[in-house]
Image (cartoon, rainbow, N blue to C red; front, side, top):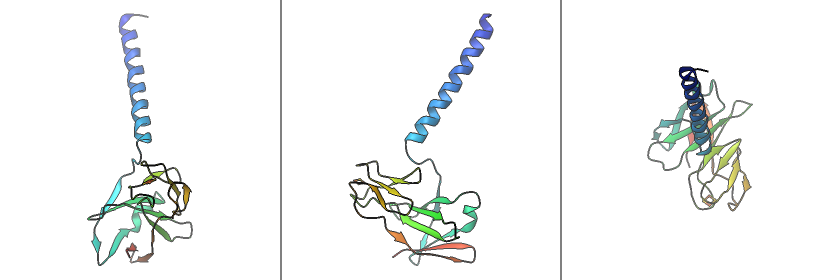
Length: 141
Ligand code: FES
């Protein structure tokens, strides 16, 4: 193998290894999902249903609220809205697999908000939702 070919192949391997390490670190640092940013008006949040054409889960980041909301489209077309606030000591939760995890002390919750691993003992707060004119309305209470 000549020198030029060796250098070219070595660089390709370095780029591939670097990309793999980057993807691995992104996956391990919690959520890489983009959050949909929106406003709270009259104690309600409005989210367009079109966000769910290619996914059944969306992170919602309401302006003025410290915690995100996890919004999941159910198989029957209804939506489940969960406040991503750990019920152990109020840490922000991140989506993980088919649920949510807390990086502070290790609690985890399923996608219905039930505790699957402590020390948290209480389920996540669930908000009622309804559909109005192709908008998902999350009623904060
Ligand atoms: S704050 Fe989440 S496990 Fe303690």
